[in-house]
Structures are given as structure tokens and as C-alpha cells.
Length: 434
Image 1 (cartoon, rainbow, N blue to C red):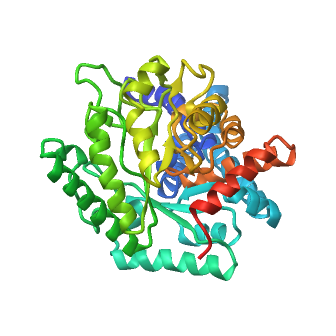
Image 2 (spheres, one colour):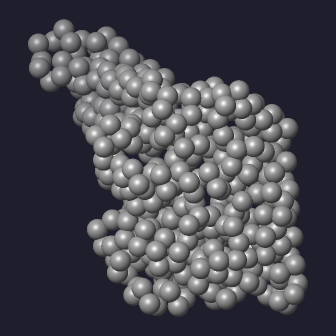
């Protein structure tokens, strides 16, 4: 056998092992590209390799290694099938949730989606409170097509005598303009910092009005904007692959952030769209990207109150803005868990110290800082801390896993009834029935 052929056979072992792991973890959000066409490619590759190995006599020869290699390449398809059956079983269990439990828990979930029919079923059954619209929902489509889809979902909610869906989007301006096109791509709010105070406020409100009018015309009623994180120093070393907060932040000056963000929020509100300010407790001092890694914010609370948190307090006091809480661990308040499911932070700081009684929503639970750990613990602790909405954005298929966590905790009486009642009241105030 030639050296090239020997190398090829040797290489089949690690590649086969990799594909077995990929198949077994087919439902993982990091492997979302494998679904659909990717699954077909994986099965076809496995079949092709097995066929070639058998055709070249690796099974008929009395060699244990050859037979094991063929069996190894049979496993990726089997592993993927098992993962798919597990997913379908969990999905089936969630869809069969008893109606009262579905409504009690479903009001706390906002999900991204790829399939209209699938999310329509969730909406009709009351298993979700809202949907999250992003670029893959508008790719290659007109604004009218998306508008009709959202309207159809709202019609189904009304027919089921359920509250209107929350319809959320991420239209900040700048690099995060997920619905542009078809909507207008506006520059980042940071571009307004060099203007005079009067013109700055006028422009910021105008940006908010334009975003609000275009979003409202689609049927979107909640915008995950503006970003209130302070702009990090240029010299700060960062492992920031997705958050890119330096390109999204308004300014490093808390007063400037408030001066631009507040009129922007008022412009949104004037157009009938709610604002969600983000990402408390702030990402400006954080080096790691919570999309993939754990991240810690080590600053003293007093220092944060005097700087990073000033814009959050300013806007929560002067507007109807809601609050997105991120997955950063605030070590001075709770070193054992991210802020998004810390009772000390949500109930202790935001609810009691700040006296904020509006809606709090998590950042996407399909992020490494949460999802690569015990997501069930995060779900239970978030609801117990007083978080109102749990966001499942990047990979909507993970909703079934996350909801199953809440459902199991509900059945075991691990969810705080008092916290659920208070959250229900906040949600009813923020999103009343039509």
C-alpha cells in the first residue's frame, strides 16, 4: 500500500470520530450549520466511505481494524438519528404541555424562529409570549411579506383568545441593523456625539422615530436598543468575536450616552415601539465575549454606580424603557453566577435598590456563557430572581430544551410562586390586551 493510501486510511479514524461526535451533538447551537443540508452531507459521506471500504475488501479480510473502521463510519448516521429522536421526543413533550401550565410558563419566553408553521403552533398554544425577528427572517424577502407573516401570527393569537405577541427586533443602527434591508440602514448613535447638544438630541430622536415608524409598520413592537454599555478603551485587550461592543457603544462618557440614548428612546416610544436598553451590568470593562465564554466584571459597585450604570438609571427613570440583562458575572455582588440569573442583582440591586418595576429580559440564552453550562439552572434561577422574559434568539430550536427546564421545575415546585405572580403583573402592565 502506498504512503498516500496509508495516510488516507489513518486519517479516516479521527475524521470518523469527529463525525460521530458531530452527529451525537447535532442539536447543539454550535453545529446549527449541520442541520438540513448538513445532515444530508454527513449521511452521504458516511455511506460513501463505508461503501468504498467494503468494496476494497476491508470487511471480508480477516482484520479486526478494518471491520472496526467500517463500523466507526456507520456510527455518525446512527448518532445523528439518536440526537434527532431525542429532540423530537422533547419537542413532542413540550407541545403536549397542559394548557394552564403552557400559559403560566409560556408568557416568559421570546423566541427566534426559522419555520413559520412551527412558531405559529407555539404562539397558538400560548407556549411563547413573543418572537424575535432577525436577518434570516428578511433575507430575500420584502417588507410586505414579513408584515403579512407577523399579522398572520397575531391573528392566530386573537383567535386563540391570547394576548398579542411581543414582536422584537435588533435594530440599533450601525453594524447591528438586522432588518436593513428592507428597512433603512442608519449609522450608529455614536456618530451623533460630535454634534451640538441641541442638534444631537434632535438627530437622536429622529433616528428613534425613523426606526420606530419602520418597525411599527412591520408589526414589530419592541426594539432591543439602544446600547448603553460604555465604550471600552482602545488599548483594552479583548476576546470579542460577536459582541463588538466598541463598534456599538455610544460613548465612554456616561453623560453623553444618556444625552443621546434618551431622545432616541423617546423617538421609538412616540412611534409606538418600546425600547430595551442593554446590556446591564455593562460590557465596556469586560474582555471576554459572552457569546462563547464566561466573562467577569470585577469593578467595585460604587464605581459602577458612578459611571457605567448612570445611563441605565437615567433612562429607566425618564422613560418606559425595559432592561436587558447580560450574562456577565458581577463579582462584587454575586461571584457564583452571571447577572442574568442572579437574585442578588435582579431582585437586590435592580428591583429593591433602584426600585425598577418594569420588564427585565435576558440576553440570548443560546450563548456560551449560559448554554455551555447548566441551562436548566439558569432558567430556574432567572425566573426566581424576578426576570420576566427569557430570550432564545440565535437558535430557536433550543426553545424546547429551555422550556422543558421550566416545565420540569414547575412540576417539582422549584419556581417561586410569588416571583411568578409579580412577573405576571409586570408583563400585563407592559403588554396589555388589545
